[in-house]
Length: 231
Image (cartoon, rainbow, N blue to C red; front, side):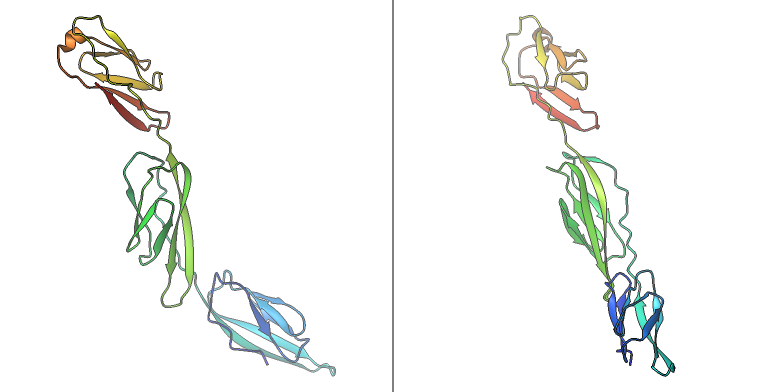
């Protein structure tokens, strides 16, 4: 007796136990690891389709008998998660990620599942290597697969143009200091002369009377951009 039937079983499922009798026989075949007392282990990894396994018993009179049974191994669904996805700054808008086959579900930090293999990934507030997951179930076989991909999210360096100020039109040019203060920052706006060091001069007489917005834009080493405004 082979304790059959076994399966169907998915290729990525855990191993199952094979039970033969009389005990002290030997199991063999693809994916089979022989055990003891008539037991064996069947590992479906790497197999597909009908797989035949065998149980052989030899009695005290050296008479042998062998029997077999077939186990149906269903393939693991093959997933495509798109990508690779380029690194993104955490102050940029959400973007779509796509996977196939459609009908699965995306999950993970920053993910909003949309359906039909699509999800939205929002990097706001995130930093580092963010792993997201796609899970798909083959409805014909109930076999499940899950795969992941990693999106690198860069933290954006915040630009600070300082507090709003009021000056007289007839004074000498004043110095504007942006934070961070280095050559990755740039000042722009009416009557502004950028010095290329995170600093600039503002000439009130050139600007004339009124309210003027000036801008400090900082582009960090990862290419992430932030802008601040002062008046």
